[in-house]
Image (cartoon, rainbow, N blue to C red; front, side, top):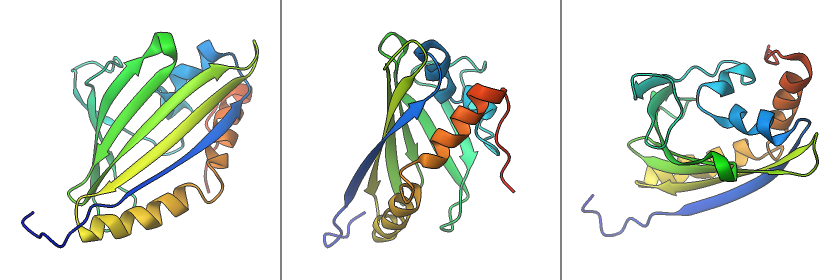
Length: 162
């Protein structure tokens, strides 16, 4: 904390997904609990509120994906269902990131979802982890999300990863 040589680095990247469903069916799938329907292995543990009702200020944790991190703490920082916008702040001791998802109906049966990740390092290690994380996350421009969500919209089931 007192290291004056440290400079936090911020990286931001976005992708636009084309999803085969009406916005009223697609947007809720980006909620913490609804994501379980399409994201294989997604298992959030809700800390607040005591229900699983999505709301601004909801707090939950998920298991981390490597980098020596054990868990991620999540907060729903913005939830505007009328604008089809949701934003999460995710943190670890070394870094935090904001995930903003904005859905727009492109037709009655298709929705465009813009997904932006903005990573900020809190330590030198956090800066390094973020560089790796943003590259890995966007190596296929979130095509894996698009495939998984469209699979769910078509079949009603999550696409299983092997």
